[in-house]
Image (cartoon, rainbow over all chains, first blue to last red):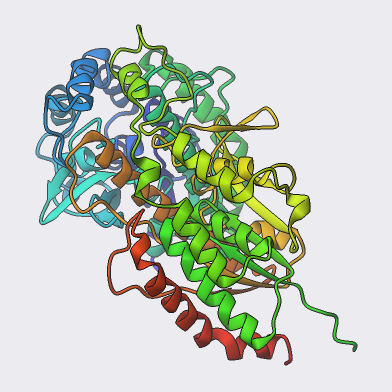
Length: 282
Length: 281
């Protein structure tokens, strides 16, 4: 058995909340627990990739602060209007936001790095736009994989890799524990988030994001329930607590989010250590 | 050991017109003399579950669905809703938003079920809707049938949410497209689970088609994740009845109903021996 793969970190979708995984990473490092694999989905793919590339945690934190600022979402309202009135044609290749700024920022972080440049195996999850099936990306340019994985339907255009048109991994598998299991991990630290839902629905966007949130939260619960009962691996949920609601792109909260992630991880460290010294489940 | 009578439930999942396949399943069980102890319906499945629970005959059920569920229920666009999406400041945008007006559908539902309640059903009936705000699955088991069906089939964005007992409810498919858990909770020993994958629009030519496409993808993934859990947990014997369709059946392809019923019948026949064995018949 390849013991290097045993401990993995899985970072689910959750926009800016995914930064909590940096707290987990900190806590693991302090204890000398090196993960053997990282799996990321949607916003989580940015952190999984950064951690797997061995980028300094402080630098990842800085990058995130500048990654999703409000100018990334420019043009949304007017594009939505013209799409709803039929003024502009909307196809599966369309989007309500031009991805230029986001793409440039991701490029500044990941450049031409490929999956071969990581210090341990990295897997990024996206969704096939036509079939809805899960697509696991484990080779090629990291920039392409992350761009595909964060392609929130309708908001950002899908991303083509090979012959496949890909969108947000959260559409099929918001917390891809299954990928870590398939890749041979038997101790999985899973950082998952429920999407924020709305209390008031005062715009078309509020309604669409609210519904997507409801669906994805229900998929998250079902998948998590399934892997707990099937028990192919020991799954340790790292569920940071946030006393206040945090918007998907509320970057000002990042230091707080990381601290909460670290706290949640610390509570699980003794158990992870015990599992790792026991020789695991197998 | 005395053979305690096993409770049989039929669960009809979300699937619009495809849910008519439940009638084919029902036909096979009627011939075999096996009655249901409980019916559970979600979204389109709630139309058929209710008809069966009311004791409608097979022919009546077909007639009533054709009257209830056809293109005409979508003929009235909700212009106000559309305007509110474009100019939320002028036309008040709230959680009543929809693309299509629900008036024609409500009128038809009332024609069939009038003021009937769950107390009028011959077989215990549970209809599943989703809490609009929390996303929880809600099993409706009392009160007006029209209200419960209307809530259960409120496809997000297409039709507005519906209020039942002060709760805003939408399509049960948003929480649980094949709600076998309700049958388990209500004490079923054997569950006939008829579930469907949602179809995709053939071409994405507008924002609303795109929304519908993504909605189908997510619903299918939710359906698979949920079903995997209940099969692994195995709190009850779950027999999947999965009709096989050789053609795409869309939201309002009611002319395909006879074919759909036939496929449901075939799928049930394939599982009949197994069901009889479980029942020790």
